[in-house]
Amino acid sequence: MRDRVYVILLFVTIMLAMSIVCSSCRTPKPSVTTVTEYDSVFIEKLVPYPLPEDTARIRALLECDENGKVVLKWFDEEHTKRVKLQFKLDSLGNLLANFETARDTVYLPVKETTVGKKTMTQSIVTREVERKLSWWQKLFIWTGCIAWIVGIVALVVWVNKRTNWIGILFNLIKKL
Image (cartoon, rainbow, N blue to C red; front, side, top):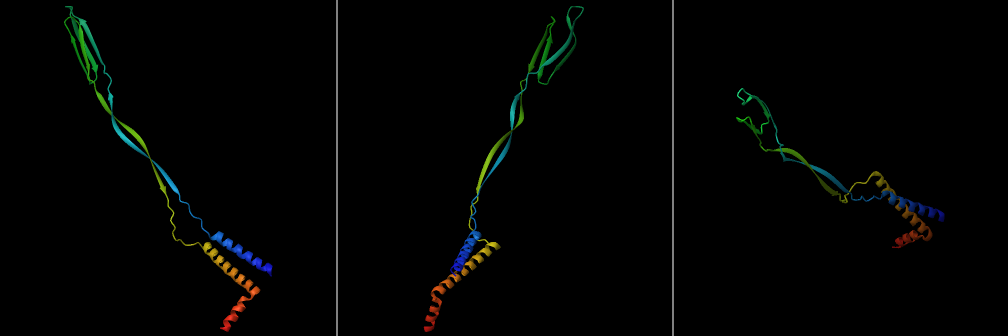
């Protein structure tokens, strides 16, 4: 008889431990999320660029006439828009050339990229919210409840067999 009681108590203890282990919930840990974004900013600037010196080319055919004077037979000149070219042929046959270039600076558009780094940290705070239990959690709660009831009933029966306290209690009630 004693072995049977110990087996029942062992069974009740195992059922209680199983119901506690299987029906308990794990507490979620707060998570921290970090998002890094890179922003590109395009800036258009005007950068000064000095134009180089210009050149000009002169081709001329100079001949002497019957009097011994230098005569210009033909003349060809090539130059760009910014060049001012003046030449003169004097009576002695000297060719004088004056060459001027207007200095100029051109402003060219240049795109410049600036990359910025923006970091955003987001932490999730866990708050307890009432939620519904799943079917297996309900099952283990009910089986744990039934195991407690069976254990208490088994304990009352076992104590009653040893001491007969329920019979004594009923006799007291009848006397009143």
